[in-house]
Image (cartoon, rainbow, N blue to C red):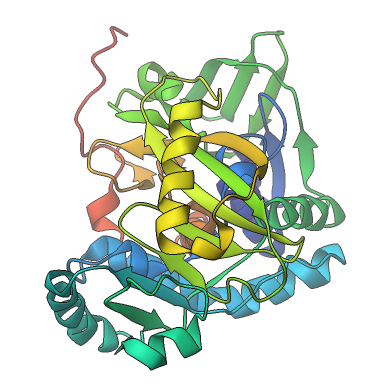
Length: 377
């Protein structure tokens, strides 16, 4: 009988790992305490921007992001074929805007190393900048144009993954309630027990619990150091082409979607597990919009929302087989890059399940790097 993989968490990472494991012939059960894709995944702007998100150096995290971006063409095709749905993957490229000449020098440094890794980027100024993005402010000194970056519509991607998993026979358990117990290390495999007393069993467990990963510290004996960062986002009504690329400034980003809106994000703050939208957070985004894309100045927001991003102490995910516990794999703490890292993480988890060599080194992301759990066993 095929190995039975139990996945804790039904966000974009959990669904991606379930899809990959099912494609590799495994039986899969996904246990989601609430609603599938109901947290960071569904709230995300859907940016696939490894070059814009990693501006300092080609470290292990950059290589993970770049590796995942390379998986996207085949992966999106498989998800769309498997679900019958379209995820609105738009290869628009990105434009990082500098307002001062002093900000252009770091862009030139960044350009040199990123182009060694396929960015194909260039610095554009004056008329060239405004030909690319006609509605960007005339106060922009220059822009770093990265043509290989792109974005998807996150809610549609989550829905398509859910449907693709369902069609592959994945058991998808929504509203399972909080996880009360994690049982592992016995010959009978692993099990999750929920607050309602329901028990879900498997041969291996993949923890994809996002901002809620800390709940597994005691059971797994490691310090997770995952905490929620509230990301507030808003959307403006906009005609097609008013914002052609993903536009980044040092204050915010803007992404034009197929539903006639431009999404602007993200105002970040620490608020525990509170997803309330605040006037202060949205006002910051509106001020940045007025400065960078004056064509949107004065427009009312048509939607405001917030999601909880799972951040670790060092900003990098927990990814790998747990030391001394070969039946447990962690894939959590992807912070603001969950959408980008979904196919790469899923492929790596699939390799770990199969016991084969991973396509990129994950040594820097070992789950136990923050030490043992401080919770008494």
